[in-house]
Amino acid sequence: MNLDFTIIFKYMPYLMKAAGLTIELAVLGIALGILLGLLAALLKISHTPLRFIANFYIWLIRGTPLLVQLFLIYYGLPQFGVKLSAFASSILGLGINSGGYLAEVFRGGIEAIPVGQTEASLSLGMGKFLAMRRIILPQALRIALPALGNQFIISLKDSSLCSVITMSELLQTSQRFASVTFASTEFYTTAAAFYLIMTTVISVVLRSMEWRLAVENRTRGY
Amino acid sequence: MELAYAPEKSIIDVHGLIKEFGKARVLNGIDTSVSAGEVVVLIGASGSGKSTFLRCLNGLESITSGEILISSVPVEKKSKNLLDIRRQVGMVFQQFNLFPHLTALQNIIEAPIHVLHQKKEEAVQIATDLLTKVGLSDKRDYYPSSLSGGQCQRVAIARALAMHPKIMLFDEPTSALDPELVGEVLTVMKQLAEDGMTMIVVTHEMSFAREVSDRVIFIDGGRIVEEGTPFEIFAGPQEKRTKAFLRRISN
Image (cartoon, rainbow over all chains, first blue to last red; front, side, top):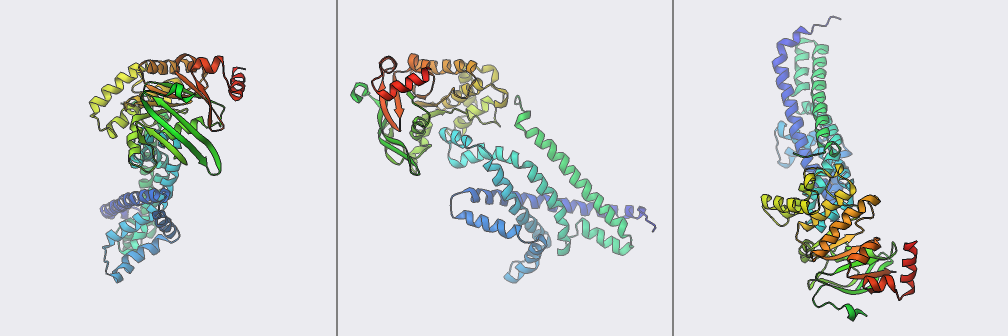
């Protein structure tokens, strides 16, 4: 076995570009996931019939593989006249998927806030939505941050599944070069290293965010 | 007996108030009224319903039957009036319930800016004055986690006052405090009473009831058992249950 990692350098610009696409997929996917997750969490804790929609969504998404969800969006939806690009399908798939998990993360955060916070808000004349937006959610999101970071890392790695619906992201690009050059180990090791670097950066950024947002570390503002 | 305290201009009127939690009847027919500027202290054993009564007054608890009028407007869970009523009725909680992610100043200006739509500079000005009034002008940029319990409670009082309420409700405001911190909160409340604020206070601080209140109401079993001036209640209680309660807490 003779490994020659120098072959990578020639392809580096393409790998960098593909890693950029991976980041793009993960960031846009998690952004959509945060919106969907927040909406589902709020519906779930509302005492309206809409909470059943949220429950159904969470049940469906968590109970089926992301790969199947991606196939259904990219190959299945066109049968109903909805034709999305591979890129849009990928964002939608990653967003819907992470949203299902984040819904429970956000619900846990919201329910961890003492009821006295809501009562104090209401007693000051705030409506329910204002209290949620200004008082409850800022505290709940801080509690949810570690789990949100976790989901971000999962989504970044899950974006590799988008390779099967023709996205030229990091894994698919590596795969293509590996089959052309027969340097499988070199390219897949490089891909793994790229993922590792990206998830490490995310972890570090999140940890510093957590620290900055931690109420315990606040003594004086401004 | 009610006639003796019939207010000239009542700001709170309560008729036949009944509150049930499931099958448990916590308030069993409360009738009373409070006039503007009056300081009323509610006393009674824990579980007697006095905190529940207070929470009914600003609609934090919905009532089972009866009627509560604040400035002649009924307090109803589903009504749009409820937000308006809550803006006029400030509340101070046993556990302070300050917003931990906001500084003392931000706690105070939050509702004036987002509920009353005050300009930020105006709200900050009012909040600064209120912090001075409660003796905490040097703590305006501190988060609640770095304030003592007594300081937190004084910020909470300032926060409620920033809405310019007509009535202030105090739900055991000193019960969660270390004994040496009780005084600073009572001093602020006393000042407020002297300024003419209408106050309803649930407390175990009998010295406060004696010195500051206009009227003491003893609640037991979800009913008003006896009410009168502090002198009448403390010096010559008429009812057996009042006597027993006062004897218990003085020991």
